[in-house]
Amino acid sequence: MAFTIPQDLHPDLMPLAWLLGTWRGKGRGEYPTTTPFLFSHEVVFNHDGRNFLNYFSRSWIINSDDEVIGQGASEVGFWRIRDKNVIEVLLAHSTGIVEGWLGVANGAKIQLEMDQGYSAPSAKIVTAGSRLYGLVDGQLFTSYDMAAEGQTLQAHLWSSLERQAAN
Image (cartoon, rainbow, N blue to C red; front, side):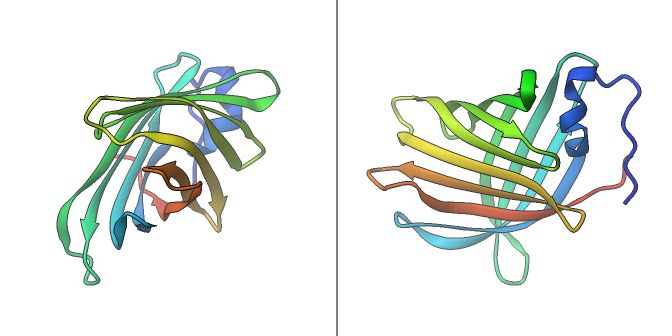
């Protein structure tokens, strides 16, 4: 699908422009403390002309027939870029976790590492994380490695998403 960079995009965000839009697809999740699962995933990146991207991600647990069988995780946040393509990301999760991430944009590949986190008293404690976002054959590939609940850093979620037509 053709993508056009918006004229009002803040110049600082040019290295992230390829992310703009709505992306949908499917993914898989696993972790030692859960049963492996499939999910439907939607990610939205948009902007309002200032020097950050708005980010929204939501998911639904699906069965092998792609039928929704439950709600999945959701998160909202903001993505900013500094000199030398350093990225700062702030995320708040529906599960009671807030995280700060740092990373680097290298073309259509973004690698992030969790910098700091806060967990509400009722939420699980995440001690480390690593995220990857990349454009692969025109699709947004995402992965999230996590250390939580006494486990070491390991693969947790990954998805492949297609850009949706603008409304």
